Image 1 (cartoon, rainbow, N blue to C red):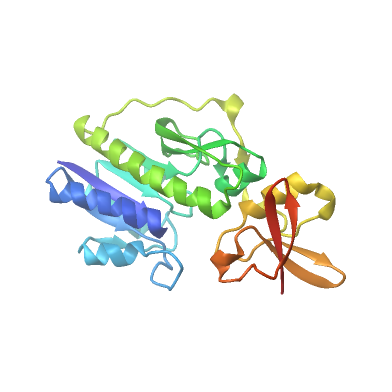
Image 2: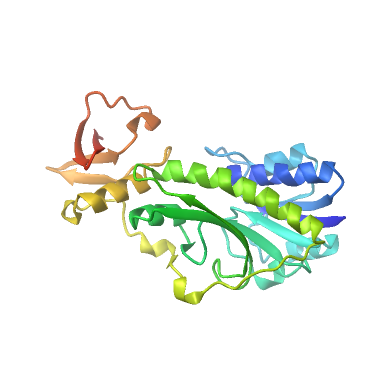
Length: 278
């Protein structure tokens, strides 16, 4: 029976943990521990991995740092065969991700090697991509740079907001995760991987997004792509300043509970960009 360490957060993390729990109920795996965010017990718009781990009566760690010596000691003692990560917000030191002998694998919402790093969905929309994807890769010392074990591509539609594409990635990612874990079980932890082609790398870090302010000199296509990329409730939408007033720009104000009937808007092709007075 394969012994699994799970690391995760948010809805995708909870859904992935449920997949592993189902495999455990069938006698295929043992979940030796769950690692959740240190702040996972707080109230957020997404589901809690720590709460779900407690419901499943699983050993739970919520470290401030993934390099914490006590965490590494405890996880080493549990002797996991393999690790799976979904949406954990920090890079792992080698002393942690190398504990499982078969490696630790991460689900990333991008078609690696394209869109490594932060905000892969918004940057793909900003760049006008017509195809995106989800990838499971082995974690190494870099940022989303490890060998790929499985991948699924999905379309990006011209009217997609960041929220739309995120939800599509969640659905595709859950299927890919379930299929990949099943393959690992059948292969006793050993699956072939392929190295990422460094010539195809697109990568972003936190500092690459300078501001959510829209510059009207960008042109309508760029403005539209930027606005829809960050149209994702409950987060604040991009904004413009006009005549000393601030307006939030939205594609789907209804998702923020705002009636668009009397809102001003401008258009890119057939797409409306609504102005919401702050």
